[in-house]
Length: 98
Image 1 (cartoon, rainbow, N blue to C red):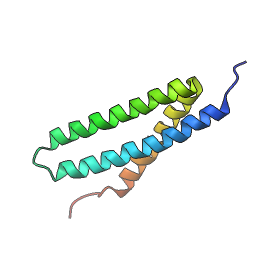
Image 2: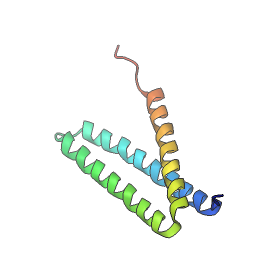
Image 3: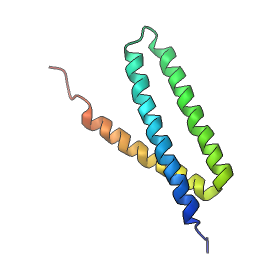
């Protein structure tokens, strides 16, 4: 039977929640800046690159320090954060222009 290391799973989950929240806050901020910019594609590409590098870099540290259970918690928490962020974005999005 596989033994689950709950401590590292929860540690990875905590880090994944924080990083996921920062990832989507950065996405929202980058989108707002890009919509006001004269060169939105460059700004969005830079924002995406920084967010992805940060996400993978922290993920790498989590895996090397905590092992596979921490990585599972990290990934799971990021996806839960993603579901919450996309749900909130749909709720607050305007339906149509009047």
